[in-house]
Image: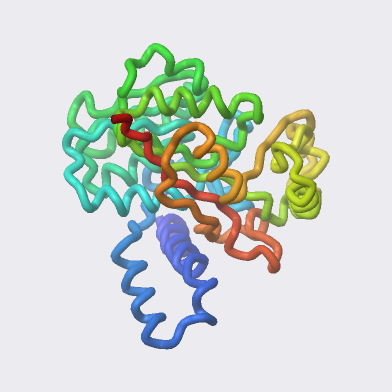
Length: 315
């Protein structure tokens, strides 16, 4: 129990310090005080992950590794999740229909319902084992029957049975970089179909800027200078990983796999091309402490690219 409390408090401190670090040297005292107050008003408290997932332990990179070798679950809300939770506080969520693509073990819906969400939540997830964790964790909350649904499958092929305009909000955290460039248009077309007119997408993707993939950064930048198509694409992930940031066993699992890293310019371009209105697009700090995923000093506080895109309402 003591170990759980330490982990929880450490996570909150890490989240706070990471988000404020970039601004400390740039603001006068009055501005800093205002920033701290704003931070408290617009972010949610991190849940105690040990309470909801007692047999899942954080990895060396700060995340909880997934069971299917498809990334990891962050210890607290980051990026687009923070934006969404803040926005939801300003509205009545009673009839809101929310879809999450790739929830892993289900940390975000726990935060969502803990923050007073009253709408319906649907998850699409590759792993049945992950969904079992999600439902077990949510069973600890008093959620009205029928408010939570799940789909086992892969997006976008396994949502095509759903009706047009099934959702008001879609949230995607660290999933979009698993798509290959030739599938971007198909994925965005399905997102557009699933949303009501005026519906919103909150999406977080990895930028090229991390210690784990630091050897790829100059390659990415040269591709951009050369105006090369799909500059963030890596065909063989294992060839670019810094071996000091991973165990040999895990590194072997990454050979032959692909990833796509996005800067804010890349995300903006993809969504505009697919007829979305971009309401907000930024590069932000990681949101939790991780020497592996944090960026080299030159690129500090640019670890994640986040976008809020809106489905255009046609006249």
